[in-house]
Image 1 (cartoon, rainbow, N blue to C red):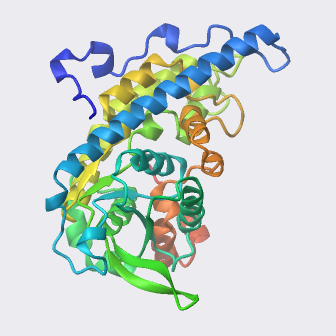
Image 2 (image 1 turned 60 degrees about the vertical axis):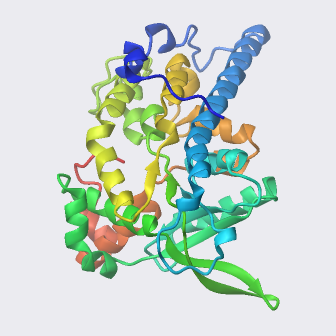
Length: 385
């Protein structure tokens, strides 16, 4: 059984403030594009990165185990009082908010290690575009990859189909849950999370040599969510901008000729983590709790945070190129577990992957392009989530 985390008073100041040691921020030796490294240096680098990946997987696995273990102990009370098509003996008591992206794939794979044999895991995916969203396509590929790697587990892809009319009908309820947040982006994220946390959708099952849709409502009282992964591992586009412009977010004002500013990236990551609680966590917890479920966040486990802080930032993310390198450590961990397709999948925020933002924009302006032209896109000035 996973050890309990240390009490808050026992945590080091660096972890409380999410402050990375300077030696773990900038690479000891920073290569230029035209500089070839000798074999010995390359071997040492690869060995250190392999150790970083192993340590991160172990820490995140322990975090998932800690959150699953409590669920196992209390599984007899894990019902939500809804009518479902599954028998009590077959009910999943753990769910994963599942976009098919690398974060949710990693959580699902690690949950497989700790959920008792014979119990299903619900993978809950929300779509606002008639089943045709990028996240739905990624989820279908993701569950296929999980089934191939872990065939002994019953993976249930719960397809939750919603639309903006339903969100409009629940507008006052959503507004109360989102308060004090009130941006367009918060509304879009909130609608996607709230309908996903409902867990009511359909499964695809084989019946008489054909696939049929079977209504399904998840009984999982605990949902694993990937919040904190992007903030700690430089998963946002703004992280690349700050890194490549010498810490200055405005174009043409780079302060470094090398266009690499590890201190600026470290500061941006630290700022995102320290304001995560105020910007996102209260909102997301209220949205999930309103559905009678408990949200748990393994990426925000103290052991995971400590492991990430002890890992050189260049092994956590490398944003030197125009694309790729974001969440380098998380992607390497997914590859280590055999999920190579998931490791290569581009990040999409839930409001875009589920297409809730597009549907709201199309309704208001006729098309997403017209919304962008009017300056009313849901990206606005709100923080990324």
